[in-house]
Image (cartoon, rainbow, N blue to C red; front, side, top):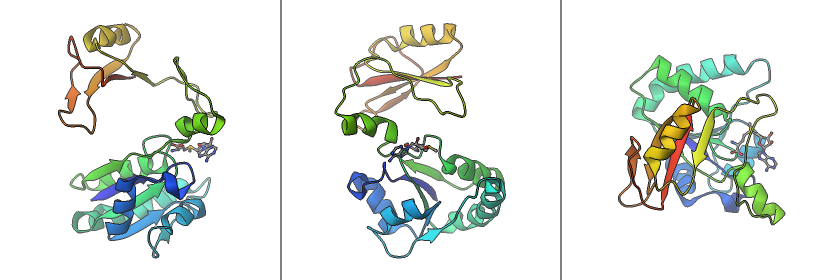
Length: 196
Ligand SMILES: C[S@@+](CC[C@H](N)C(=O)[O-])C[C@H]1O[C@@H](n2cnc3c(N)ncnc32)[C@H](O)[C@@H]1O
């Protein structure tokens, strides 16, 4: 299995218990730089650093994917990144390349604390209205998350009118989790995720 593991924004105390377990138990742990290495070293001694230099990152991804596409069938390998692994992360390219070379590899992601939520606690600010996260390199809005989505179908229709596809995610990581086609009604612990 190939595991994309989130390390949080920089403080090892913000690494989740699930991420810590993955780091301790995987056969090998790979990190994309020294900052990530310093966090992982809090939990295990042997860490492999693979740098992804600007301009030659594609070559490094290809070479590493070639290796992992076969090793991850019999071994569990963790690739650990800062923040949350789902956002603007090197793991996206690596996982895509590994899957392309060997679709039998199981890929899992361990979520973590992203910099763009942690920053509000750091600043002592509360977010109680819609907010936008974007990269300085790309202004396109490709995703929208709707909280308090107790009427998922209505929300998904509104999203569709603005060109989004969408999915209902209810009681995520809780008992009774539901992920699927938006329904008419849902509990308070529901989000609708839209993407273009
Ligand atoms: C390639 S993105 C990766 C985002 C990461 N996956 C996450 O969930 O936070 C890297 C950018 O995230 C922001 N970032 C990440 N960690 C940060 C930190 N500890 N302090 C300030 N900005 C941070 C910076 O804008 C940085 O350029």
